[in-house]
Amino acid sequence: MKYAPLLTLVLLLLAGACKRNDTTYAVITTGFGDITIKLYNKTPEHRDNFIKLVKEEFYDYTLFHRVVPDFVVQGGDPKSRNAHPLDLLGEGDPGYLLEPEIGAIHIRGAVGAARKSDDINPSRKSNGSQFYLVWGAGVDDATLDTWEERKGIKYSEAQRKLYKEKGGLPYLDMDYTVFGEIVEGLDVLEKIAKVPTTRNDRPTDDIRMKVRLVEK
Image (cartoon, rainbow, N blue to C red; front, side, top):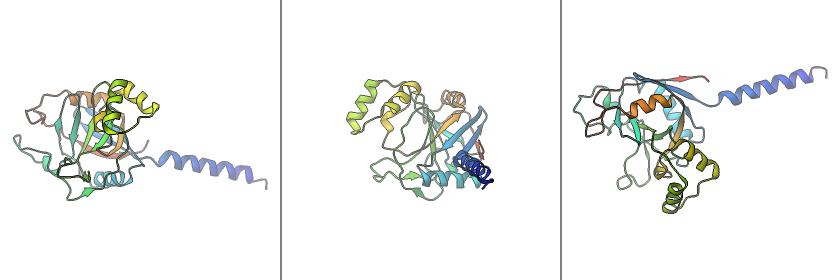
């Protein structure tokens, strides 16, 4: 019996370690700096798929091929790895789609899965590899009220607070799967979001990435 308190302490420490380590993080390295993202456990299919692709080094040397000011920075097209400067990008994938796991909101720094539009993809399945990082713009209560009415949704007070503090893209909510968020490197995203682009939203100078899983 005299060992019971020690055993209890050990079990509590182990439980705490498991709780700390069950969240997956990845670092996206670019010429502008590093962006660290946290993957959501509430989107397990997208989380596990991203982990798989990172372990396979699928994203290495692919481009952020689409940059739209006050909107998103998008990458993950495997066809971008060896693309000619005049190539149109955005159609590539790993050969499969992902079932939607829609629910999380598009605050600034959100990591979402790209997909084709509703007219050809009514089930809103996600591209198997392409993702976007949300920059967006400022958001106020009136904007959130508008999108609540149009989409038939209801934002919690916590969600409203996040949108008003960070900004983002509420008009994408409930239409795309958000499977993570940036925890470090929003300043790097801002730099990328401001680069010159062609009329097809492709940066005039290639922005390549490498992605690795990390422990936090």
